[in-house]
Amino acid sequence: MATDSALTKLAPLEAILFDIDGTLSDSDPIHFCAFRELLQEIGFNEGVPITEEFYSANISGAHNDDLARSLFPDMDHEKAMQFMDDKEAMFRKLAPGHLKAVDGLHDLCRWIEGHNLKRAAVTNAPRANAELMLSLLGLTEFFPVLVIGSECDRAKPFPDPYLKALLLIDASPDHTFIFEDSASGIRAGVAAGVPVVGLTTRNPGKALKDAGASLLIKDFQDPKLLSVLEEVKPATENGQA
Image (cartoon, rainbow, N blue to C red; front, side, top):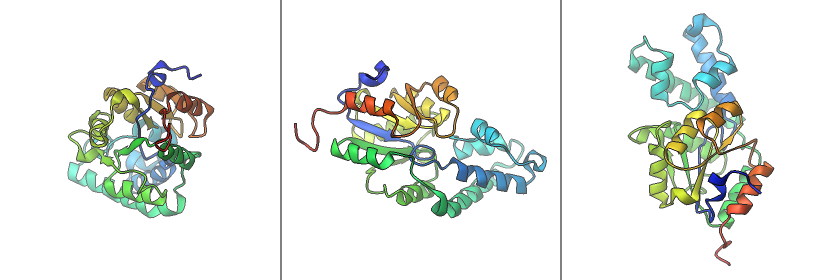
């Protein structure tokens, strides 16, 4: 039996919302490499390369506009955003050779399709990155809706992207949950009134739990997740009772 009432009371499940970076794919190492190289090039931190710990605590899951201000508080914002654009271009160059799905993702997607669940991808990534990642993972057709944080009034950690996704797929927050891997994304989901399952892909479990995650899993094959899905699955499968 699943132990978290916030998830078990979702039955019958209607929809699942997914973050992309670090959730569908362990993409953080690619972002980390791009940030580390470009930040060192411009002499950030006196030229000392950033660490994975610094990346996890200060960069992972944040929106580029916010990162530009926090990483470069004394830099002209337009110039700081140009750095972010250059970093995203480097990510897109590196991704095709390194992007891989989190274990169990495609089995989960087949389960979702088999149970006719609504779904959407919701991300703070730029649209070009998001569309590339979905394409590389073979999930472009799987997600009928893609919500981009910068195209909403407010990006994560505000609830706006998840609220927009619920509206677009016509799903109730009372029968929906979210997969996220960052504290910022989890806070956004919780603020939208939707339970969140946190993936400990790269970020510390304590940080995810402190942000409000209802359940922590290692990947989409985690027995804890499979137990929850069994409890909340719809009564019909492929339209059959």
